[in-house]
Image (tube, rainbow, N blue to C red; front, side, top):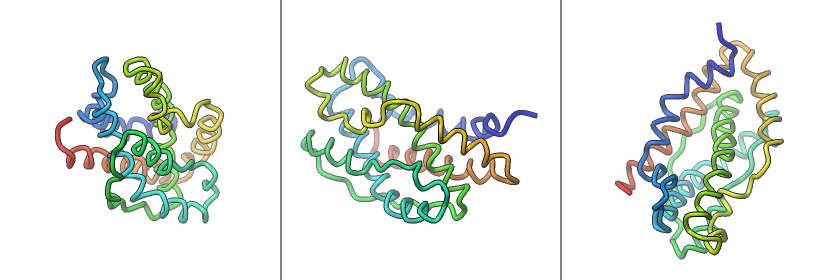
Length: 188
C-alpha cells in the first residue's frame, strides 16, 4: 500500500494534468507567450480567487490550517491593473464542508505557487524584465519553507480516517473550478 501523500497525488493527478493542458494555462509555458496570454490567465485566476478567498479565509480561521493560506486576489488585481485589464467578475466556488477538505484547497493552491515561481522566471525571459512588474502573482511566494511546513501538516492529516478522500475532494475542487473557468473563457 502506498503512503497517503502518494495516494492523494494519484487521486488528483488526472485533473491536475487536465488543468495544465488547458490552452489558457499551457500557453504560458511556450516561448512565444504574449502579454495577452498572461492577461487571460491572470483574469481566470482572479475570478477564481475573488470567488474563493474571503469565504476560504473565514472558514479556515476555525481550523488549525488558517496560517497556511496566503491571499492572492490583491496580487492578481495589481498585475491586471498594471496590464490595463479590467477585474473579472467573481466565480462561484463552493468550498468543502470539512477542515480536511479546506486543507485540500490550500494544498492545491499552495502547490501551484511552486510552479508559479518557475513560470514567473520563464515569463520574464520571454517577455522581458520590464514585464516583471506584471507578475507579482507568480513571484510573490518564493522559497519552499512554507510548502515544507504545509506538507508536514498535510501528511499528518492524511493519516486520519477518510482524510485522503476529503483532502482530495478539496484539491480536486480547485483543479475542476479552474478548468471550468478556462473553458468558459474560450480558446487562447
